[in-house]
Image 1 (cartoon, rainbow, N blue to C red):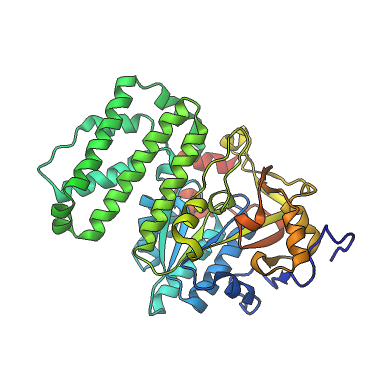
Image 2: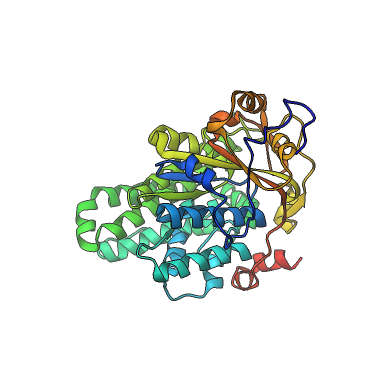
Length: 435
C-alpha cells in the first residue's frame, strides 16, 4: 500500500481486500457486505461504466452472497422492464433459447456479454433446487429507452384479452412505429425520426397514450377480475413507462436532456417500488449515476435528481448503495463513434483529488471500503474528495452522502461478447460487433 501522505490514502484498517472476483469462489471475504446492508430491503450495486467484465463479475458474486446468505429474492437490473419478463421466465425454468433471452430479454446491449450469460445461468441453476427462487426484473424504460413499441404492444395485447370489444386507434401504434429503432445504436435516428413527424401526429400519439392509460386505470376493477392482478399490473406498468418514453423523446427532440433524465430516473424509481411490493429484498444493479444519493451532474447538464435520491427519500435506511471505482484498463466509449461500433476506449489514470485516485492509491488489488465505519482520519480523507470518474468523464460528488460503501476495481476490461446473443440480435447489432 502506498503511504506517501496521510491525506492521500486510506488506512489499512479501512481496506477490506477481495481475494477474488470469481462468482464461483469462496464468499468468506464478504463479511464487510453483511455489515453494510444490515436489514435493508434494497441493496444497490453500481458500476462506473457499462459492459466491463469485472463489473459483471462483482455483481454476480455479491448477488450470490446476498441470495445464499441473506435470502434476497430478486435481481433488478438497469434494462427494460417489459423485456425483462422474458428473462424472468427463463431463469425460473422456462423454455427459450438463452441467446434469444440475452438479445431480446434485455435492452441497451446489456445482455450481449458472456458474464451476463453466466449470471443468468447461475440464477436458473439456483432456482432448480432452491426452496425460494430468485426472480429477474428490468427496471428501465423499454425499447432501449427509445422505442414505445415493447411497452405499448404489451398493453395492447393485454387489452385484447381484458377488453376484446374495445377498438384501439391503429394510428397510435403506427405513429410509435415511425420512430421505433432496433437497438441503442440508433439513438440519433430515433430522435431525428420523431422530430420529423408532423406536430399533429406527435400530439395525437401523446393523447392516445394518455387515453389508453386512463382506460386501464379507470377500469382496473373490471380488468383485474377478468385477467388477474398480476397481468393487469404488469400491463399498466409497461404502458406507464411507454408514456415516459413519449415524454422524453419530445424533450430530446427539442434538446432538453435534463428533463429526459429527471423523467427516466423518477420512472425507474417507481418501477423499483413496484418490484418491492412483490419481493421482500432486492439486489439492484445500475450505473453509479443512477443509484447514488446525490444529484447527477453530467456534462452539459444542471444537477438532476437520481433514482437513488428518490429511493432514499421513500425508503430511508431500507436503501443501501455500493458504488464502484476503476483504475486503469478499458471503459465504455462515450464518443459519437460508439454508435458505429467503437464500444470501448482506454482509461486514463484517475484524476488527482478524485475518489478513483484515492482508492487506487490505497491498495493494489480489488477491495471494499465501508464508508459508514471509517475512523475520523479516514472520514476526513474521503470528505476531501470532490469528484468521481464515470467512464471517461468526471463529475462532482460527495461520496459520504452518495454511498454507503465503495468497491475498487484496479483494472477493468471489455466484457467478452456472447456469440449466441450476437447471432440472435438485430442486423445493426451484428454489424457493429463484426467491425
